[in-house]
Image (cartoon, rainbow, N blue to C red; front, side, top):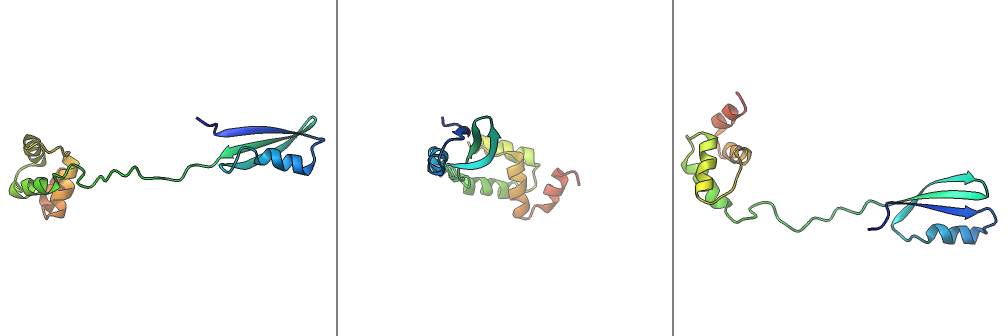
Amino acid sequence: MEPKALVIDIPAAATPEDATSALNAPGEGFFLVQVLPIAGGHRAYLRRYKPPYTPSGKQRADADGKEAAALAIIRDNAGLPLRTIVDKLADAGITRGKDWVRRKAASMGRAEDSSRAMGG
């Protein structure tokens, strides 16, 4: 694993070209944070750029391919409590939580159940 920060000491006798070369040595992934004078030269602090966000490629929406079946179970059991629907989903081999069921039920028009689930 590469370091997140570097410290480079530049001697006072270094030419500008030597100093530039020393500061560019770590490569493209670092930026200069601070340069402080020290006895005999300067001390440069560099920090690594935060890597850009790269999605893992995993699609969360319907990752297991069972969303259509889960929505059908929610639709067929519209009058039941959310916890019971979650249990019916588990019996069908579909892993979904109560919050997921509440959100989907509310988007399907079960506003009375979703407000009851939130204490309303």
